[in-house]
Image (cartoon, rainbow, N blue to C red; front, side, top):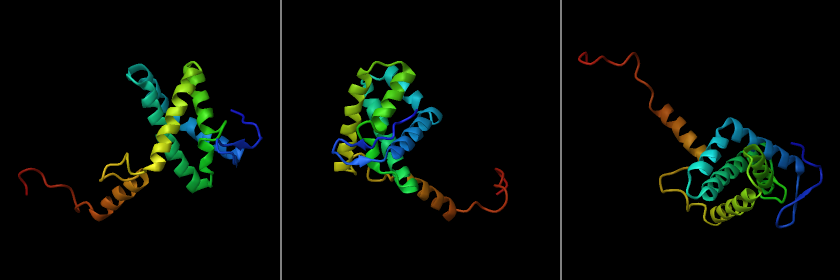
Length: 162
C-alpha cells in the first residue's frame, strides 16, 4: 500500500506526517492478518446482530493499542489514527477490499469507531472495571506475580507421598 507524500490533515486541521500514517497502517494490517483480527471481523459480520457495533469496538481497541505502542516506541503522533485519509480510513478501505464489502461498510463503521474513541477519551475509566488494568500493566502484574511466587524446588510430591 503506497501512501502519497502529501501531509495529511486531521479533522481538526493540524498536519500529520504521512510516514506515521503509513507505519500505523502497516502495523494495523499486520495485526489484522497475523493476529487474527480479520477472523474477528468476519465473525462479527456473519454472527452479530449488530456488526457495526462489534467491528467498531474491535477497531477502537486496535487504535488504542497501536496508538499507545507506536507513540511510545516510535514517537508516532496519535492524531494519525483519526486523520482524514489516515489510519482509520486506510484500514477500513483495506478491510473492504479484502472481504469484498461495499463502501457503506466504512460509512457505518468509521463513525462508530470515532464515537467509541471519543467517549473513551472523555471518560477513560468507563470501560474498565475496578479490578482491570491496561494490557501493559496486566503483563507487568503477571510478571511480578511470577517473580514473587517462585516454584518450589524439586518435583511436586506424588499423591500419598507427602
